[in-house]
Image (cartoon, rainbow, N blue to C red; front, side):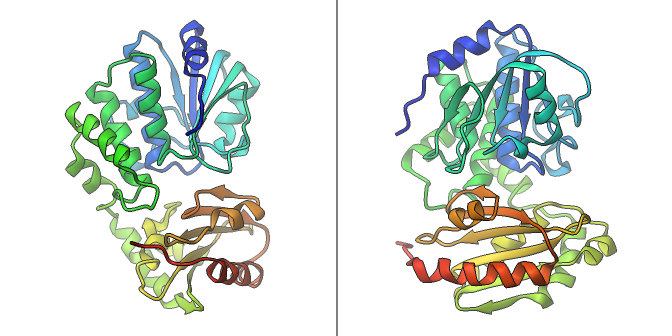
Length: 327
């Protein structure tokens, strides 16, 4: 278990007159969940933090308490402390993170990714945590800050989404204990699951109609391609593509899944998932990305065809080096 100087982190926040909280680009449930979970709790603690993420809160997460207080960009401001949430490195927090770091005296790095680069002056980094919201929950306990409904709902959202409904291999009994505590605070597991894992806009289904014919399976690697023209056809810019990479991994014969997505700037966004016993984080890190053993990604230069020539052999190596460990 990672040793964290909780007292130092708490004293740094309590001494701050001005606070900025940011999270990563293309935010998921854990990013926004940790942002709002901590932000709402700090407001109840008497602080007035500014919350920011590039582009604002995605539509499917706007049910979370306080989502309307999150700004989508930063152009002015000076802060005593900036808290970076769920970002493994500095570029991951986008333009709001870049501006915040340049205009903050101290940066607190709160994250659970094994690939975290330990940026900032105060580190609250726990790779063994299933989500950054788990770390926030533990931090609130260490600072004796009660977890009210406004914090519980976002924190449970991060817990549910980053474990894919408590189905990842890093889920422990303590994970379920935290979920129980959040439910006791009033958060609805049914609602959170329905609004995140069990919800897709129709345009995502339309996108899959164009993408699924590209699916191929070879040597335990299943992969699909999302062309820019298909996103334009259905007016979809969902960074997660509706969970397509997770869906592909449900194939019994697949050990690793990958989605190659064309971007407007000529690069390719890579999303990886794998079953327990395999590791896609190391591959993602070697490509300039990061993430978890079972869920990671990167963005690389070149077109889709070039990306596949480079990446597919590496994915086959991931399969060859692993062993399925579902028990």
